[in-house]
Length: 371
Image 1 (cartoon, rainbow, N blue to C red):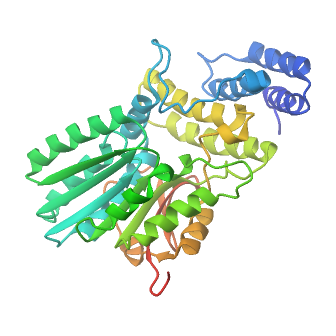
Image 2 (cartoon, rainbow, N blue to C red):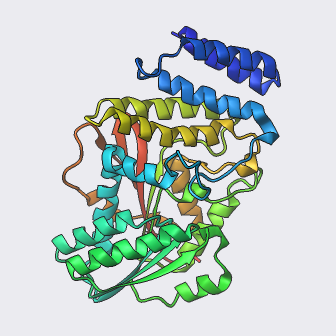
Image 3 (tube, helix red, strand yellow):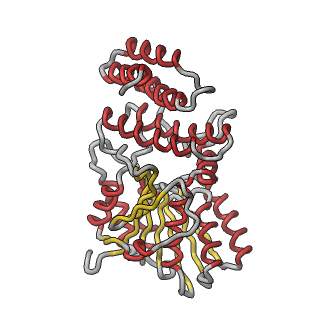
């Protein structure tokens, strides 16, 4: 049953899509009047979506921007810092890390030297956990080359420093190579050079490939091209972590509904956790910026958060010449938070809350004979 808040939010959406900006603004103002964000937890959810619709009303005058790359106003935390807070507290993230790193340990163990190519490495948080996991398992390669691809030079510098510190701590020899660029913009010469890295080569991309820029009517060709490029490198295995929701091809109304169902479920989970109120609000602000992008951006070519379902990523991997990585099905990571469950499917492990798979960890390897 829809509540008055639901009705006003949906009225705002319909008026906005029909170009009735005055009526949309009136509906949203009426919604704001019903909200008690300090006293009612779910009212922040309505506020985030209403704010995104307000941005949509600004239309072309709203300047689109990638929240990871553009600085926030001085009083606002950076998106990458909010992401670190999310990773520290959200079991969806920690469970995805645990599954992905368990697979990566299996792919890297037992080798004298190896290369890990990390697409969207950020500040190197996952790699530090991976080095600790490799050390605990007695599986550190004697020499590890870590190639980090990221459009943020500041994040790459932080990743190099942090990884070097952890490498010294666990006694690992790690050579860091930073590539400051979106993966889809890597030059042919760089792809060619990557074919010469020490083997085996393992690829990791955690919450990164949905940022690959696409033309509005391209059908996702840029993502397919990136996956084909990765396949051509002949990696031993590839591990992806992605939200399991369609914010990519779905038309606006469906995308709004998908976003509401996905993010409010994430917020429900967050509200069950023993996390300080201020930090819960900060994590919701992180997701609020994603809602703003998914719902509030009018220029389709400017959208950044283009999430896809696990099945869609599996289809892309198959087209690019990958098959499911068998070892993913055997992974049994410890210390998974009791608030979430692992749902095993062919080719991916879903991180689920109340029967909804919110995040997927996919594993793939090159198909034999595919070129």
